[in-house]
Figure 1: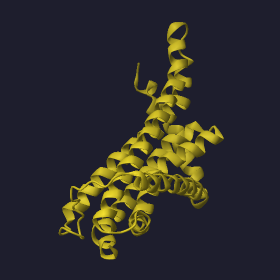
Figure 2 (figure 1 turned 90 degrees about the vertical axis):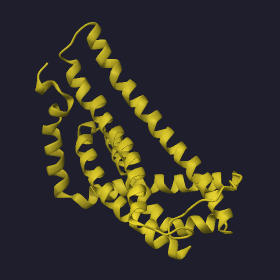
Figure 3 (figure 1 turned 90 degrees about the horizontal axis):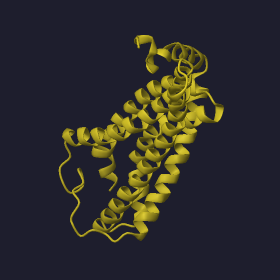
Length: 227
């Protein structure tokens, strides 16, 4: 094995070509990603509200910066850190799609016999794992956020829907940013353009982190003013 055999190295030519093509019409590409991401966000928020309605509030007091405890920049860092972990999972899922469906088939051509079969099976297995991890992430977020919404709405004496509407001030851009890599994954999967996914990972991760940084500030210092 040499450096040229690595999946990431093999994909640089496709990545550069993809970035040049996207640079010619960036807003059209971004609109497709954002549109799908907003659909996923809407679905997740609906699930969060459904979980909140069916959950029993926890009597343990929740500390919310800016509402019942002083807000600080360290709180912004904590929010950004947690969201960055979720973004990392979604970005790695996008990159795994590139490796499984673009690089592995190319690598498989250099093998025969048993190792060729292993490479042929590895791609679909990786996609199945990524799909399962993504569904697990969405399900976990719906449960955790829904139970938190139930407790916080009870604590603040507000209806869950009313509280969610106010929290959406930061939650909608935050979730939309988190789901950008997954949206890019879906767009590429529908078009069969798996070779574009490494470029999509780079672009969506950079854009998402910028939005998450702003959303964390809004969550800590602005949204509490409406609450």
